Image (cartoon, rainbow, N blue to C red):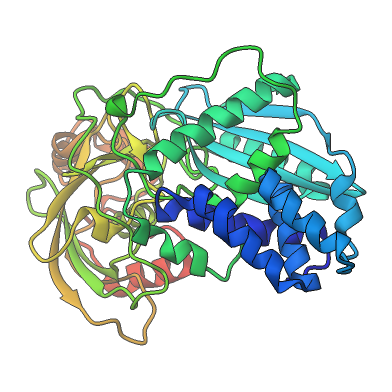
Length: 460
């Protein structure tokens, strides 16, 4: 093991330990009974570094004894070994929560021998209060991390509440989240985790969870008993959620939409990043109830997240993301995570997870007042081309303007603007900001213009 500081060594040890745990039962017994003595038998500085790092992350008599055996034999210890014996100091533990209680962020930093690192634990309260993801960062970025959480909440129209937790309570909150996630992971196929350990982008959830457990063991024992976890009551789990999913990228208007289902079939596993590239889906997105029909034909990679699909539809129809939305699928409803409505976070879920191939359908509804329901169907599965996605390749008619009253209100708007003598003709022009009815063109459609807006990331 070649590591320049003990944290790097601990991450290597955490990777090994977490992979062993996920492989199945019996790992701990094999580790202490056979593996650690076998490492000690190698009797090299690298072997000693491994044993010291393992003992630091998951203290055990076997690891400590094996390491001491090499020290007694004169094997030189790594330069950072003395740092492992220094006390760990903890910064203030903070909890950031959204007002609907769907998600929270547990934030804290730890310092040892002058090296400081922070953790953010994203807790999904719609999934048994389980940890959804962990972010590991240099402690000097703490202000930036906290600011990002708060700013994303503001952009979402949410007042993110900040709460200071005493060390014992912070430990309880973290352990509850990690333990619930560990229970859920036992239900998954171990092969699903292979991609995480092959990822070259940085440590994944399970490595960081192992390291975080080592840090919180330095905190006072919680004053209340461990949280009970009933896996039978959980909603279908998501794969690894992205940082601050619940807080980011949604309009400020909050409206209730009753009567939605909260479950669905078990969501298929997400495509592995180490596997082949996803194909391209050709989707037809039609505005339900519109007469004449209003629709768009879109091409985008099958592994596009539902959050990005939401943005694509917004651009393609000229909406402005001023209202809430939801995807209604056979696997449940996805949008802004909401415990009461049963909506799960959309950003971690991909298009191909909810629509596996040609003919699959689901619904996207935007603005729960006007109720713009879009029927989405997979028309074709195409090979990926060396072009920019997403793109619009077809469609029919302009989309209605925001807040015009749904498909019936839009039909009335078209009638009023086509009749110069109508008593509301002038008021409707003013409302649209138009000087002439000739500027209102409900039949207009330009696929190239929409594709350009998609490529620029703007609104069509």
